[in-house]
Amino acid sequence: MNSTRKVTLVRTSRTLAVSTIAGLLLASFAQVANAEGRYGTEQKVREFTSNSQQSHAISDFAQRMKERYNINIDQSEYQVQADSTGISILPRPDSEIAKKYNSAGQSAAPKKSPAAADPNTFAGPTFNVKPPSLQEINSAKKLKPASTQAEPNWFPTECWSRAYMKFFGLDEDLAWADSCHVLGWLPPTNGRGNYMYRMWSTCSTTPEATGKVTLTECGVQDLITTPNAAWVDWAPRADAQIGTCGTFGYAITIGAITGSWSFPACDTIKIDKHNPDVYFKSWWSGRASGKNRSTEMAISFTVPETVGVSGDPRISTSVEICRPGPLGDPCEDTQ
Image (cartoon, rainbow, N blue to C red; front, side, top):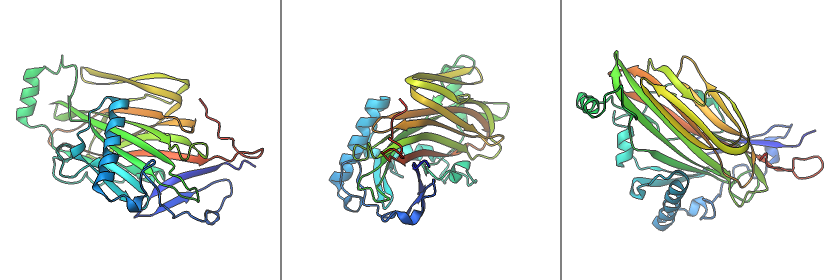
């Protein structure tokens, strides 16, 4: 019998739950709720209170964003949130970037998200933005007519990070995910607002957990919660068998504009698209311990011109326990 243990993380109210397969009982883990994790090699969550510790975590996060994505993070805009399940770094509610993504002045429109049913997802900052004003629309049209405009009018890129803490008796942190998203708009046509949205993430096991657990999923997903949202385009278009690590390109269109991007991809990139709901997920699937794995997605859609757009973005990460031995899984990387 295969003794591989598949572990998924479930975010509940200040708790951490573990689900297993292969006939293993939850009770067999003596320290399921023991979440005295650290942020990478930093202090334990319960000790993660000083301004210097939080500043150091944000500084490390900003450095990673610069090195991986060439994105300059304004560290004064970000904060650390720590609880018994882990540590998050995300924009402060009063920051300029958070205000831009919440310009409608309220949380994203409530709607049951398919992402919420996925047990290894963690919510990112939701967004609920006003439609562009008449002045903004006229300004965009004067700057570049929609028929020749090469790019949407992008909001600033918003990023966040999630570090997952130890559990099921392992004395190390397990994994992390660094993610960003960006929303762009075009002048409305035929009574519909036109939008592009991109999201991307990089995940890995921590140095402490490398060789003890293997990363099996790194994903991004979003549900556009605006009523009467309608699909235009999405990418990746379908599951992609990558195999050996290389560069994976993708593109979407809306009107006369096409956006194209690429990222370092390995193994398999999978997708899940719902219809008519504008929900999309893209994730890397494979096995990797101590190696970075990435995924990206982009969608274009329309909403009624007068209502703006809201969304529920989430990231996903899952790991499996390595069980070396003749009956176990040696946790070999797929690439």
